[in-house]
Every structure is written in structure tokens, then in C-alpha cells.
Amino acid sequence: MIAPLELLDFLWTLWIVGWLVAALWTAKTVVRQPVAARLTHGLLVFAGAVLLFGRTGRLGPLVRPLFPATPWTAWAGVVLCAVGLGFAVWARVLIGRYWSGSVVLKADHALIRVGPYALTRHPIYSGLLLALTGTALARDSLGGLLGLALLFAGAVVKLRQEERLLLEHFGLAYETYRAEVPALIPRI
Image 1: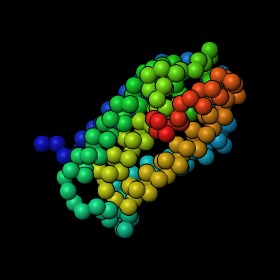
Image 2: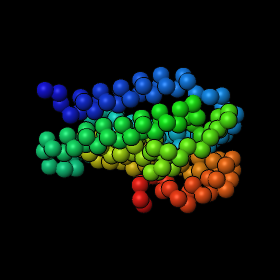
Image 3: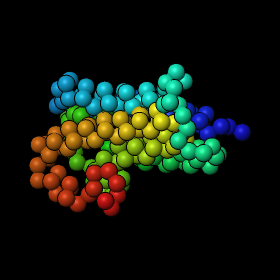
Image 4: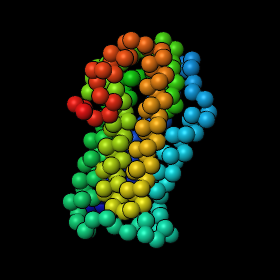
């Protein structure tokens, strides 16, 4: 039988490969955020990923478990990860050629408001944050929890940068969307 952490590694590897392949079919970028802005969230995400996904055996107290050892905790984390990655993929498929790993505007950029974009304005972030939360639960360590906090911070910084760009580009249409649809968590 496959172990929960092995399944997590498989899910994340499958997601990364799919994400990289899908990135080949995006529209031409017409507006790109400055490098300094990318570094702001990029450094938080990098540090968080190292703590959450890295093998932190030499970090002493950061590898200490947070919960009593039970199999259901790790499996609950795997389920959250799978659901979160599935939600992010659904959103990525719907945004299609307008997607980018950076905060950009694509040629003929359109505001998507259907599917997961009717539930949250940033469903890819929502799905990834749920998947990362599941990963932290399954990995069960102080380092994983700190990594998750840094990844959340990086997502919030990037989300705010994206919101500014979309508001500048779409104006009232985006302001209306912001008033009607929550940023990350449905119904909140």
C-alpha cells in the first residue's frame, strides 16, 4: 500500500508537470509587473516551499511533529491536497490562455466569472492554498507549518498585486466583481 507522503509527492509532481505543459499554450503577455514586485512574493513562496517540501532533517525543532501520530491525520492531508489541486486545475482550465505564473495581462485579456471564478476571484490560489494546507497537515512538522504561513503570505502579496492590475485594466467591471465574489474563500 502506498504511504500518504508518497502519494502527496506523486500528486504534486503530477500537478507540476501538468502546469508546465499547460503553460506552453498561453496568450502573448502585453503587461508584466516589475521584477521587484515579482521578487516580493517570489521570495516568500520560495522560503515557504523549502520549509514545507524540503527535507529539513537538519533543522532540529522544525521537524518536531505537531500532532500525536495517527494515520488519519496524514490521509486527511492527502484528501485536502487532492481536492485543492483539483479545484486549482479546474480554474486553470477555465482561465485558459489568460493564465500566467506572474502578475500579467495577456493580449485580449478577458474577465472570467464562471465556474470556480464565480465562487472566488482567485480560485487557483484558493485551490493551491487548500492543497498546501493538506500537505502541511500530512507532513506534520513545525517547519511545514512555518512554510505554510510563508506560502500564504506570498499568495496574499501576489493576490493584492493582481487585484491592482485587474482593477486598473477592467475598472468598474472588476470593482463589481470584487463586490460580488470573495477573494479566496467561497461565501466569506
